[in-house]
Image (cartoon, rainbow over all chains, first blue to last red; front, side):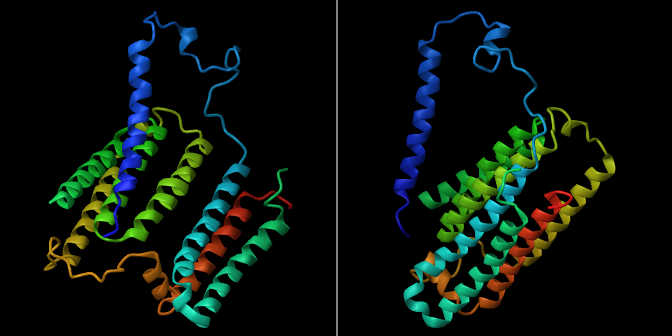
Length: 118
Length: 166
């Protein structure tokens, strides 16, 4: 079993940073009364123009889905790269076919204007 | 021993986080608890020796898929309390029934298998290289099917969200 101590330490460091930031500010900050203005989200001194959680263009969602698809493609290519030396020609062409199928997806996306921001 | 302690830690936290996921009123907070749950499941994968799957669990599920969930929550403009208003008893009963069915099926699948003493694993079990060796030789066909499935996802996303005339 490879050592996962570094990852554990990273998590502990992250928890420490968050805890320290929250804890110290709770300790040091002057205690004043909470007013409505203080609890508002900060928008350059303006009152918020609208409620958060407004509907937004579906285009963001398209980008997100396409990101996931190509993310998963890379996830599959990673074990291929790790085992590349032992796989030989067969593995190479299998991976190329895999990439080629998804390349069609990229071409379709490009041709359809999915990469442009209208 | 520390492995068992870690297992119980991950298992308990994941169950608690899953419970909080389905009981929170605010869907965004539910999604954040789901991240905690998925991280703990990744930890359990690590303890099982499935290192690559654990990494993918964090990268794809806790990262990308959760981001999609948050997108959907914002897209549908779900506000606090809307989820709480879904009090359709029939749906709830159906959910309980399906959960029970899945549980029974899992129980039957693991019948006679000792979960504490698994088979001996080879030294490179679960590493990316050993997975790649299998994936790109023995399991090439499922792999290419996955490629087609991802292609369908690309086309589907573009068609569903596309303009009337591109």
